Image (spheres, rainbow over the protein chains, first blue to last red):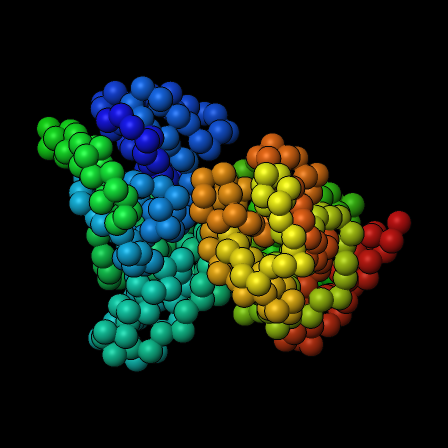
Length: 213
Length: 213
């Protein structure tokens, strides 16, 4: 793992800690989660680490500004970037679901949906899910706090990520359908895989062995 | 200011503190910035306050899930929501600018631009700015940390908000053109303005007087 340093993009948020733990087990350190810095260099391992918004990771890797990236499958399915995806890292399990208020669920029947208004951060996956079922969907695209939308009358239904389900419960919402399951994935820029095949396949192999333990 | 409570949407982030200070001067309290709660009610003033991502404020107000909202002019110009915009609140001054590395600026001439690649959170404003000048633009749409893009080779130029300019300087970037200036604005749902004309115009008037002091 010498030569031109590789760049690895890691997502801020819930995947950062397990991603850094994986890197630590592979001998990479020097990335300080508490720091406000966004670029770290491990010269010895020939690795530069970027800390980015999760939604930006596919872009950085597709354009080659990062050779490697770690990002949730949810984001890959939503954005469909042209990248190589060699490895399921196993951590960061969550599910993208349709949810609505308990009150609505008491009198609702998904089999009768012909038109729904849905608030979400995942417009592409949401559109595809409902379209495949012959249901017309009006998307309300939001940036955050999706669980608020039914409470304040913005949209009766939401499509959002759930982990424990605690956020749904705390807001009086219930899951009514599962769209997709997600874990963290390793992604690789297609050109980098050719120009730096040796070091990149060494990283992939090392991660694969570590994940298989 | 009695009757059905009005809903006011406030943006998380840099505009929240001055927005709450304005509300405090108008007698609204009970909104705890340190709390993780997103909905607050001031029953005495007939006001419900939502704390939202800035990008979601125009959506909430356009759909009527909030009657009133406070949001930067930058966001209004980017999203062009169908809302009433009665008042410039004066605070939250910032500018949307084109920036690039000092090194590039030393040999660059904007008068000769015919094609640029630009990373930004403001695709609509960016596209319009360059199109109006006859310059083709390839947009790299990002969610955060735009200032990183030139450092890592994602895009030579960025379009981003600046306040003090400190973030640009810290990353070796210089401003090369100003696109637009922004301050916080009060926005109002068009239907609410008719159905709750009395209380809404009372709030607009009170804010106007407070801002004029």
